[in-house]
Image 1: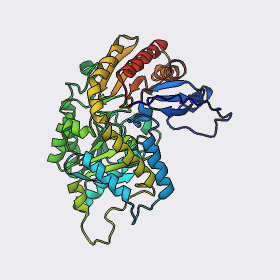
Image 2: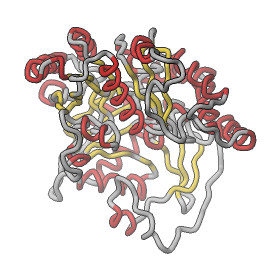
Image 3: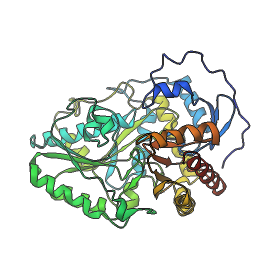
Image 4: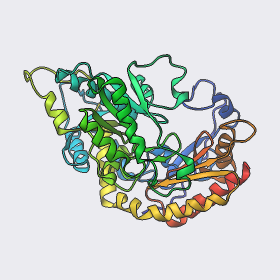
Length: 448
């Protein structure tokens, strides 16, 4: 599955790094000691100075099929040469409809409609707008309240950070959207520490939605949005029974349920979507990242038939939803998406991830003996390793680990504060799991 490659580019680093204001990055620290990548193939990145680094994070939860897939590159090139752009408003192109059908085939039953955008952030804002508009067409205009969850991440649009629950993503940007409330996070270290898969404890956290309904009134609430696994905050899997309980409560009160599957979609938890793993059908699923293997930006919302069909009323010549993006269903992104879905199908990568999950969990749990490891959580091919803060304050040990892993141990990790996150491509072998764990252990020791 992994084609061996000796591609090790060595490229000059620009003398001036000041012009690029990097996102979600400590810019001054980075520019003093840059972590530059210049190439990628299969399970590895190549640094600008030619070192080979194992990719323990699938880029940024994106490259589920590994890097440098030739069929995806060829599909993008062919599309660029034949149809570089097509307007998505009032016009269409065949691959957009083909890709939507392929995605709908992977989605739960009764979810057969796809609205395309360009990122997870746009997908979330799209889903929130659909929810609000849905209640408007049902003459329930009082349903404007949106419910997120503490420690949730839903992108960086104003809608996404409003329903999101990560304080650093919110505190600099004012009051955000009004009429937003939050469920509690589902993590309790005292009762869930070192869990493999879904923790036994915590389904009752969903019952807090009943309290919020009592507080505000069901007639004011449009939608609840949650991640089946809270990834960006440091990997918090949903407790057993939690998502089913949320579905029961939302249905009881006429509230739409949105699963943010930007991270969990396309195999990360061993299924096309986490909704399948948990046997819960929401009203909408947001996706991005893995749909194109990260090769071209794309996102979207999968919409339940009932929600979609209720928009399809009134005169046929009138726009049903006044929303969209210039690059919705971009031809290059659609080409990449179709080629990516072919790889997932032909190489059975979702099934592979499911089979590898217990081996990955067992290997990662061996890190609990390393210094300063406070907790480890695993689900699918994903793990969060909490390190105790050091004297530099919260996040300092995590930053030191990020730098040490890249510069000294030839591995690319992700960090969320003092949590190390492992989320490798689904093509990973057992030997490569061992390599990632070994290099992660060396990194943890280096910052002890």
